[in-house]
Image (cartoon, rainbow, N blue to C red):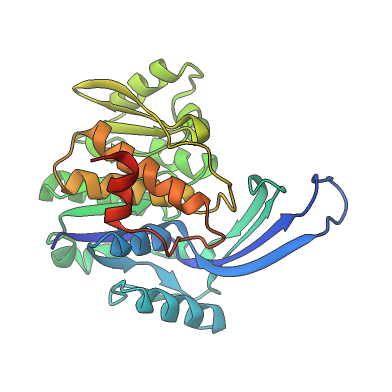
Length: 303
């Protein structure tokens, strides 16, 4: 069984969804749900549901939210032996969704994962070297991202980076890469923030020049664009869905992509698998859909 180690955020999600048209500057009647989330944690759980052996290297607080995240994530089958207890409270992601389940605004408090430093990664370097793929999200400090890029270059272990948000994507501009990183999965906003270009194809070329071998740009309902040394390909999203909640859809897409890569698919095929995983998630109120499985993915896309 393929082994993946994910390095990134784990937190509690507090999600409020308006029942009618959202009105700024006032209270909106709606529904509030608390669930376990975090980009790295979500990717890890999705990968387990897709049949992989997964360890999560994250930082949790010594508090009730940390206990909730640990228990829920362990019960899903994710190995937490690499996860640390930090000095701050467990991270919290507060999100407001409109009546269609789309992101209106969000605030994240991720001080604990920002405590992680290269010395913590160096301490488990032997275990990292045994992974088939490493996945890092940009919740971690730029120094840790740089360490992982250097480690990947010297060890040969493939590294996939999920930028998370516009401010966090810019961390990747703080250092140069000695060898191209295997893959990065930005959305269009993050792509523009990293390259300064609004033209999609030109921005992708610039991202390759910045040291990323494979680029998969997530474009919401428009699907994705997959770009590799073999060329650029449009990836069509599955048909229209009744969207329950967008939170975690990008994380599911990354997980589906990684499964495809580990199965030896082309980047276009793997990104198509990712889009199917995102579609399944969009229909769920949870940050990770309990309906996700490898068989269901392949039925959706016909592989």
